[in-house]
Each structure stands twice: as structure tokens, then as C-alpha cells.
Image 1 (tube, rainbow, N blue to C red):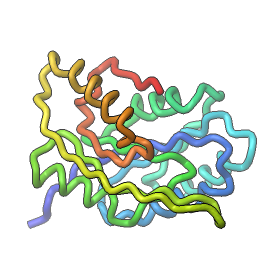
Image 2 (tube, rainbow, N blue to C red):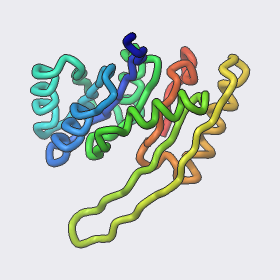
Image 3 (cartoon, one colour):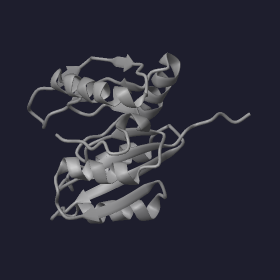
Image 4 (tube, rainbow, N blue to C red):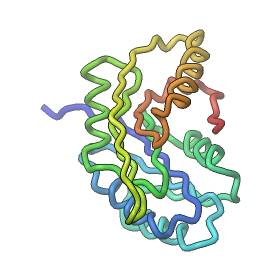
Length: 186
């Protein structure tokens, strides 16, 4: 019997990251989780980032490129949210990369703990010659998804953001946590 793997939408805001974008997109291409759609939001890049994304979109049907005028990272993420069809959402920046099992591990943590979202480990790697800083915080939370709790979710996300947990967006969320008109503001 084949196991069920719900669609997970990955949203990648991109602006002038041609130096790093191959690392990011290769890390997404090599994910072990089998059911992904990956939205690359080219936010008006003036370098070759958009062209690089076009090539990934042509060679892998999971990649979808959207070119838009520069509106900032929050609006780029919102553009991705409006197009996403997945049951879960994951954000990654165009200059970041994730390990091959990242999405699978976060999804399994949600299923195992019956949580509404999961957060994983991430490591900040600086340019050669500087220090490396490792974050070791993990968190899985279960929330009621009633309309009254969307405000509580937004408040929780703001609190977690200010605590430093969301610095690299190492979180996988149920899509329904965002609500119909919920938009991100950074």
C-alpha cells in the first residue's frame, strides 16, 4: 500500500542572489520528501538570478518561477502564498540551503506530535574567515485551527520571531494557519 504524502509548497523570495541561488535550488531539488511544489519569486532581480530560476523551472516540473517588480521580501512571500496549493508551507531564502531531509524531518515531526507546525535546527554559516554560529532550538506546537485562534497564532509567530527562532525560517506550517486574508509583514 502506498503511503500518503500531502503536497508541501516551498516559497523562495529571490532578489539578486546569483552567487548563492544554485546552492539553494539544488538543495530543494534534492529533497527526500516526494511531493513538493517550489515557487521561485524573482522580486525584480537585476542580476542573473531570474534566468537561473528559469532554467530550473524548465528542467524540473516542481519549480514554478514568478517574475515581478521589486516589492520587497514580504510581498514576494505573499505572492507565493497566493499561488501555493500545498497542505503545508515552507519558506526558504534564495541565499540559504537546506539539508536533503529537511522537509521530510519537519513533516514527520508534525505527524508524530500532531502539531500545527514544526521548527527544526538550522546553522548560520558565514563567509570564509568568519565564525559559524549554530542554533539548537526545536519546537513543535499544536494549535486549534478555529477562526478565533488566528490572532493567537499571529501573536505566537511574532513572539517566536522576536525570540530569534525564525531567523532562517526553519519552519513548516499547516496552510490553514494563515487564514484567507493573512499576509506577512516583516
